[in-house]
Image (tube, rainbow, N blue to C red):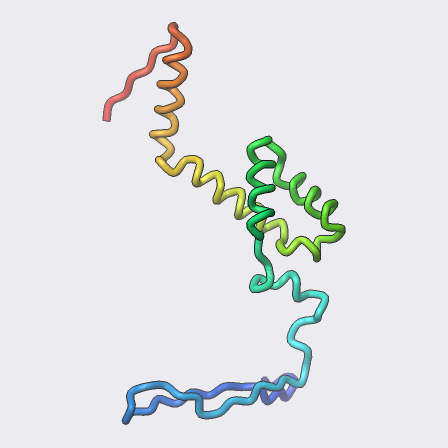
Length: 131
């Protein structure tokens, strides 16, 4: 890196005789801090929603608790956002995954199932469709 004069690098070379790549040069030490230690919990590779939290999130989602409220609950329970293990974007992504699973049969099939259910419970409701 030219700005800091950092010597950290890795260089590969293809060995034509054995037909594979090999490490030719490797220097691991950086002359600067890559990421501040206070920022490490926010790096993508360190963030994960654990299994217990997934269960809590699904329960709150089924109870119709808003996603931003869920995040506040986690922060409240764990004392700090650093202690949670994920950020709000991870939570929103997980909620979207849950919603996609809820309509995994497809939007049209979900709507038709709802309409047929309504038809069974309400004798004055009528529905039909053609493909």
